[in-house]
Image (tube, rainbow, N blue to C red; front, side, top):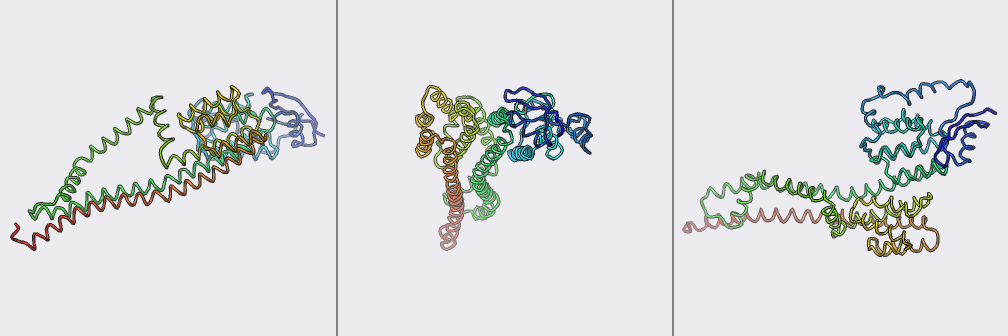
Length: 431
């Protein structure tokens, strides 16, 4: 049997080097994983002839910043505020999990992904990860250089996988987690896009009607010299204001947006705005149920992978994106630190519905907390679907009614002038 020289990351985080005897590379990888370490590089000991193309692949993977696109080098700069779409993060995690499950070392897998992935930003990040690994850093340590791409939750799970020697399994669970988060985000976006399109179409229709059609009709009425009824006069004044002072409306709209941004940049202003969004009637139910489902699924995933409860709660504080909710989650973590059960601490803050808390309490009592949280996520995911369907069914009629009311008022103003004109024609002595 051949000897293999290996480099692996031990459970303590340090690099371990050595030589072992195995039937093949796959058997050598299994031996290293059995020791609780993550294999980084495995090579046949002695002057073995490299496989055809292996040198070229390593040269491509470890090439200097001068090779490749300039955007790759910029994206790969450690500490850069590089962002990445959720779909590309899912692709990277899935591909890396597949390669590690197939028996490749982390060094080989990242080297292959550098050449396989076509997205410039993603390719640059993978290249930086590979280079950091070769320099002796762990994968989770290099990922911390890209906080806008790899969240604290993601990095901590990868770190747990490195420490336990089950990185491939952890990555597969991350794939499932990211897919669930993406599905929830897509549902919320779908619920908001259709109403937004209807509102935009309605506004455009009203503007065209007021600026094009109304002047043509009312111009005829004013040329008759008759006194116009009050609804028609109001319509003419509205048309004159809209056509003559449209720039003022734009300034007012821009001022409102600027003022909102200025207020929400302050901690107190952001807190008040986030509290308003959380309690906004009707539409806040979508935001809430999305948070409930994501919170339960993420907490179940973290606990299943051995992350302590307090650490899990710390990682979960940021997933809502709501400062008002985040402050209450900080208080929940403090209460759990003092010995209060999680379900009781959440109940005191009145953030979660009774069904959520009752199911969580059952999971705490039965010792099947992770499985229970997955069930809670499924339940509230289905409830999110119902809320999305309700909003998409409710908003279109409301928008249509609003447009019909405005158009009706315009038509009423025109018809009032028509009736006034016909009445004057039937009674010429009225002039």
